[in-house]
Image (cartoon, rainbow, N blue to C red; front, side, top):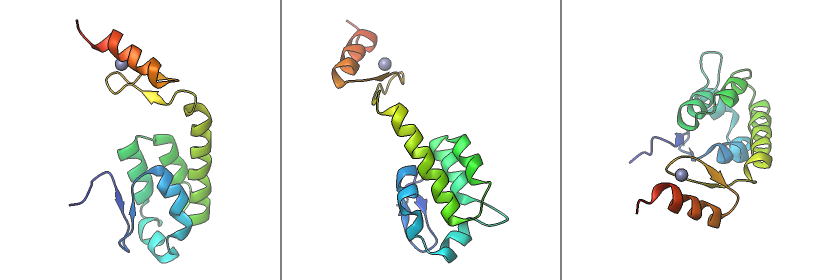
Length: 116
Ligand SMILES: [Zn+2]
């Protein structure tokens, strides 16, 4: 069964995340890339916007139909994200607050979400 969060390439390849997209873009054959990105559409931009809610990245992707340029855009965004995200990487699944440590998160979870 297909996972609707994954991106299924026309040649059978699968991309599971924006990170994977950025890392593997250069391995996708040009003719396959062109099937997804051309003057009429940009499937990757749609995917990034709808599955990952990264509108800004999607908008940037729509500015080019060039594979290498697209990859640079994605990788830049991944790098930019890393510097801000690595500080608070433990995210509460219930309220989306982020914490610097697992202990911080579990303390928060106990205090904020566990009813006594
Ligand atoms: Zn929480």
